[in-house]
Length: 572
Image (cartoon, rainbow, N blue to C red; front, side, top):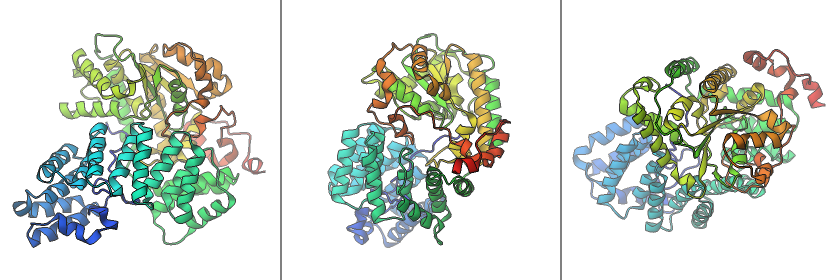
């Protein structure tokens, strides 16, 4: 079935330097330092026609005209097919087409011809990272940094990849290397600020974004990073600057949409709810026009999953297989980060965050069988499920190097609970629920860098919530002793009792530290990074302040009773 998963990271696929807008420069961006000579040097030894064609290929890749890039490469294959730059550009094109195995093969062939080429190693690292081979990516970026230590980009890519693996000290060291070589490298500056937020140094991260904006106030990504700190509010001066940028003529629809999410959050913080609502609606409409999503097709996919698992499939014979895994499932913005943070405070649990492994394994199996999930479920036997379960444990073993148990809160995992239970019958599933109006409104206010494409239209968003709700009710009925419902509002009302119940369900001994989760220092890579480091607050509901403006959302969710608080009351 089609599902709203996150696409592979193609950042810096084509070059060692990640351009802040496209992340796709193709020429050797030593480029800022030695721009014009780069392509000529890289195509040395080729006929003039091939050199001109490769230049065009670079332009096609920059513009994401990948079919044209393929055609141009094919036209010179006979005269350039064994040249490392030809192979490199072919690898970049395959990577952007998400044909990662072919890309890796082409880039490895290029390295055999040019084993000292830092750019090819950087491109290889990007493809390996996108394919999920983080160790291989780190090795490739590290080798590129050794080969050309004065170039900022390999250090930047190395730092970002290390950060994804929670190797914080090494990541900071690599990013600092990049910034020493290129102090104005915006990507490295933002990556460093992002990492500060993730490790709980909130004020340091906010200061990092503000330093960037002091030099480049029009940088949309920095505004997004700053306003995504849910515990941080903009000053009046910053708010005025953001309003001017949002209203400025000549900016792209994409940038205006992204600025709109930042401005909407800021206006809400200021109590300007009617204006915030208007800006959020405009930003979502613009964002939705950029994306492709078929809510009807997704709902049919949910129907097919329910039909496929209505009769329980065979599962691995070992009922304890997967006991070390705690899956945390939910809609976005429903409390899953908080739940994971509480569990990861336990000495026996490592929080792995939104890892893609479960969906990736299901997709691999579907490709191997030549049938989409869940069409092959009925044909899978106990040995198949055990093979997939052990593959999952192998892929995620890095998260259990220091702790016996780990979490997985991939946002699409709720779709795969039946498969995950067949693979790993010993696993636990924690379903995080929050008031549906609060959940959907919080999603509607959030710009997602990737995935969650259903959140930008109220009708599609509420349809998704209904699909999530009915499938989770189905899973609860199928696996009542393996699926636990953690209700956000109940956690706020009685955290001690709810946390104890959660630990009992996960078969974890009580740890007093879990009641003081806000004191835990760990990497949190979601927009809730600031919130989970504060004591629980009971004033997190935002929808009452919008009054009748949210009546269409409530009606779509079947919530008849509107809030008592009116817009005018909230603004007073």
